[in-house]
Structure formats: structure tokens, C-alpha cells
Image (tube, rainbow, N blue to C red; front, side, top):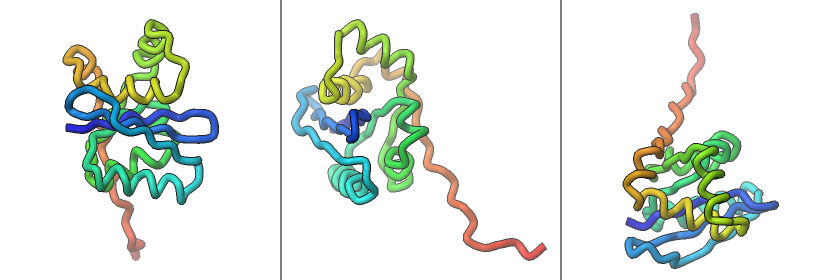
Length: 130
């Protein structure tokens, strides 16, 4: 299964697609605009990837919730775990950070620490009369 690590860089989102062989096959960058997010989401949905992101990004950006709503498996990694991994691996580059996130599900010990992002409940489109 191909996984995509999603990382918030300065003024853009970075997604790295890692194939079943563990090799990063593609890097995508999207501006922090609605159109760019939509384009990135459409590409990820068409690619049928699993997405891995941080708790903070899952709370602050609409893309992970939209991906979960569209049927993608979205995994959240704890911010403190990600920070410790980045420090220990001396990662400062957004592309390498996204690639590391994409590889987390392949490591059994770290996969156990990931939590699935459930799609938000659909809001009622009808007002109650009483």
C-alpha cells in the first residue's frame, strides 16, 4: 500500500508518496489555498493512498478531515513522538519530514502509536422545527 506523509512547511503543504518498497516515489507541494488543497486531495484520492499526518495538522488544516470524509485512511501521529523522531534523525527539511511520516506505518512498533482519524459526522442539513 502506498502511503503519503503530509507535513506543513513554510507557506505550503508537502506530501511525499512512499510505495510498498519503502522508497519515496513522488513529492507534491501545495500552497495554502483552497484550490491547491483541493488539487492535492483529488490526487491523493485518485492514488488511493493512506495518509499520515501529525495531530496538530489534523486539527488545524481541513485537508486530513476532507481526506477521511472521502474514504482515505488517515493516521495521526502524536506531536511529541514526531518531534522526538525528527530530533533523533536530525530532520529539518520538510520533504524528509513528510517522507518519515509516510514510513511510520511500516514500523510495527510505531504503527501501534498511530491513531485513525475518523471522518467528522455529517452535519444535519435540516433545521428541527421544535
